[in-house]
Image (tube, rainbow, N blue to C red):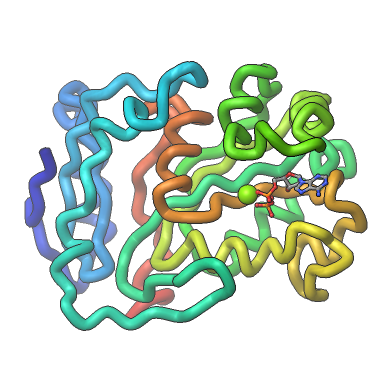
Length: 239
Ligand code: DAT
Ligand code: MG
């Protein structure tokens, strides 16, 4: 269930949102608050138990309602990107992860900084030693690939930094900031293009679709590890 228009605000979103977001009632009832691109406050019920690497994908998403506002704009503009279309209207979520090589090489701050500077909103962040089962679930679509075992060994070889980011078109934009899978083919200026040389050590992961963004955030984060807040810079990012 999803209820829209608890409040619509114009000039002072921060004051209103911060008091509502601290509401213990909202927490107790398992509700999440978020914002549409048009600054409407959304109350989203999340009565599901997030988070098990062993759950099926459909179960993981059974309580993730589609955003009602996603269907309201009849004339949406889109930016075309290879393999992905970035919405310029819809708030999306993406799962970004600094892989063990990025952590070992001291690149955590650099990588976080790229998404921060772009203007996306960090909603989840943790250092985490990934169990094998979770790595296998995360990369289940690649199970048949010859490099799968090596990939799982790599992802579980040391701590990773898990991040949830939110924003308009964040999925495709993050993929652009990250660059091509093979760092030697990634453009200079991208994370992989600047900081890595080999596909098997490409320092960072980013979800490849809005659906996978939700799936992966639910997989890697417990519900109370994801935080809804309004950055002070919000009015300076979007008119
Ligand atoms: P991406 O991480 O760019 O989304 P992917 O989803 O195709 O790329 O693959 C996931 C990861 O698997 C990738 O970041 C590194 C590894 N990988 C992909 N192709 C590989 C290959 N040909 N050899 C070794 N590792 C590979
Ligand atoms: Mg991928």
